[in-house]
Length: 206
Image 1 (cartoon, rainbow, N blue to C red):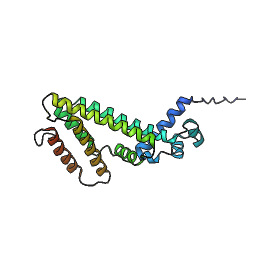
Image 2 (cartoon, rainbow, N blue to C red):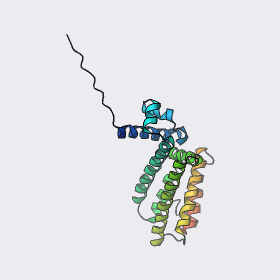
Image 3 (cartoon, rainbow, N blue to C red):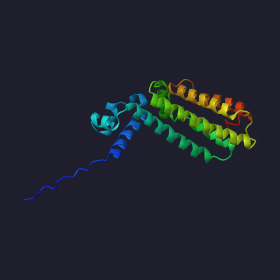
Image 4 (cartoon, rainbow, N blue to C red):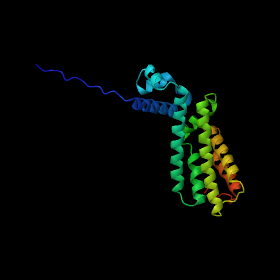
């Protein structure tokens, strides 16, 4: 007579459960936007009961904020690595503008756009402010490095960085609804940044 071998199910630790839930929320935010991150959708994505999600994450606002922060922080790290491998100031700026306006980041753009519209979620709004500051600081550092090397010319790198960030965000939001061809958006951005940085016409659109 063959005896059955009992199945031993391992219980996940609270930290493992929270990580599992956070990862599910991140996947939802990246594919459908932060507005789609709800108690029920996260439970379905993680394959657990809604009560379990509620037990480990009492505040869904914090879950949404964390998902947003993780996504945009990962993107900034990726962009920083790409830009840092691009050489001197001009090719670095070319790489920055090209990768942010090449229409391959619609998923992250949707995350940003929905995050701005969900400003009543204070936890999310706080993260949006932090991440926008991070982006502005990154762009400002690139501009300052270009000024220091004599490639760029501006008296206010911080203002240039904020203007660039606003234009990038706006043009990428336009891309979500396919308003205007992508080449036109890149041309407009390149022309504006060339003027702001005092570089020859066409230098950032080569």
